[in-house]
Length: 59
Length: 285
Image (tube, rainbow over all chains, first blue to last red; front, side):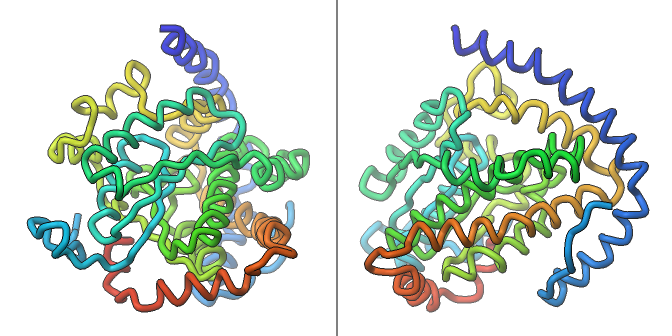
């Protein structure tokens, strides 16, 4: 019973955390979309050839 | 899903020809890893269920429920359940440079924590496999959950090349195309209750992770199409950044030990080498 209550408590507290972070994530990812598009091309090439995609820099 | 590589199911135990003597599986105790363990047991004589504790999981003992059921179903001599401590490796791989990770990945770290944790678990399991001469590992990754970074096909394929193959171990995702592992377990009569996926809070067969709840919400609702290219790119870059730490950890773990890392890799490589290529079919059928 205690386990069940604890699991519910974790869900009640942490689900809103996920939603708040998600809204922040949408805004953040929208601002970085050009960066992600460029990195995606390098990543695809690296996965296909097994080569290093180069340094993963922060924009 | 295809099970073309499985041995004849109706054959008596002594007449079966298993493709490999032993295999391990990353085992949470949930329906996906339980079904994956069953699938692997059809091609491996002995299966070790590896539950890795990164140090912050609650109710880890829940994983014993399905482990006990598998031992009952397949035979206690064919299944072992081992709970490994993965705290040390998790501290390095996931929590090694928290500030830099949050600066670079920002809110996406909400989902990427699971990737770091999974990579730590892979490292702990890899060490276990090498020490015990187990040439095959599987997990319960499924395509349906590929919004979650560690279950992306690109990550699984990349991780095979960059981690498992380097140390001579073959990695499989035998139920990747399975959408209803709980119903399959019901059919097999391995599950403890019907339709377990719908009872995750009321009756749980795996540990509870406090980080897992927001990570799941984030990944399912915000990290799919809404995130554009971010999920694939973040997953690739985050994992690439971890491999040097992981390799260093493994080398340090075996440093000065006998037999050494090279000998252990050679040993598992010899055992996994005769496996037919058709084994790949159960990876991404």
